[in-house]
Length: 181
Image 1 (tube, one colour):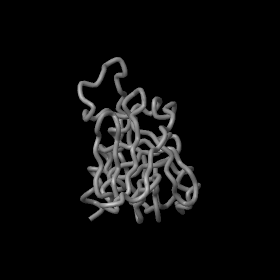
Image 2 (spheres, helix red, strand yellow):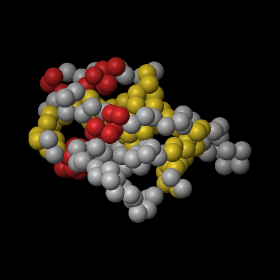
Image 3 (cartoon, helix red, strand yellow):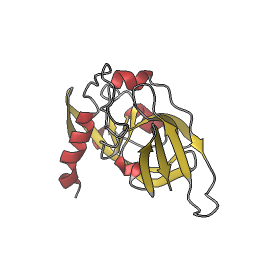
């Protein structure tokens, strides 16, 4: 099954390296913007507005404001550590570099880098793993699939659909990303 999804993983990783043209204003809040890795490094995580379970629905929510570039960046928690992540609905999986993966307890050996991803910067090696738990405020997911890339290939963590699909819903409304579980 992994060989069937790999082209989609490669495409998602490749999309993470496409430069964004910052001088254009978005026409709609819902419009998807591509990640510029330089802006992801400089983007400051936004304050997370969280709440306890809603008194009638029992659902938990987290609300993030878009940064000045239209990105949703926040501090996530994995393996008891805080990691800065950029939410990327165009990425099939969570993607992180090897240093971040090791810091949150993911064991990765050189022999695990048996997958290849084609990115705008060329072909890179990737390893497939799972995070026991990934949290953002009041919402969390277990057994989150993640692709790990060499440090020189990926400077920030991308939070893709392998996390978002484990939530009840996510939507963009009035410049805010609302995650519901």
